[in-house]
Length: 223
Image (cartoon, rainbow, N blue to C red):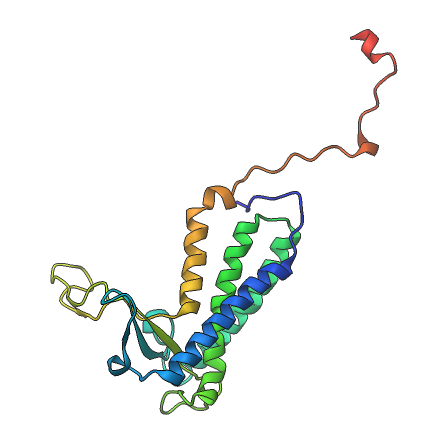
């Protein structure tokens, strides 16, 4: 299936501007957290009471703290993120040229902005903020992602009858950042709007004047 085509080609600039705004907002929030907050629960700041908090946390791996084997797993992850960003840029330009639905392209821009935001952490934060894990071969490309949004939906032990996670202790929903949120929102919006973004129907194109069938002068009289 292909996203719905429109009759007007979109300008890629406005979608890259959307991605850039996500990157700037994400990086400013991480700078502020690193500059003004203490790591961990000691520097935790309530935002919506106990429902949502700011908690300065370092994530050395992927989403939800998942990690690849050391010592070069982080380097592989950073390289993969870089390739994904290049692919997204090319994909957005292609979607604009193909006159794909603007809403779908905007969702891809949200995903791009989030991906670049976390990629910056991985490449530069080991040097800028000196937060590369101990034992890293180099500080470049081994920076840890800064997370800060903490939503403790459930704190306690899961029932033992639950598969996989039964009996384990939960501190709440994994701590995330604005870049993660942007990626999540982009994916969810695509899933919720599949009927609009992935409509197989194509626009009806008017025949070219030069290719229009010729009508005999007396055709109306013969009708």
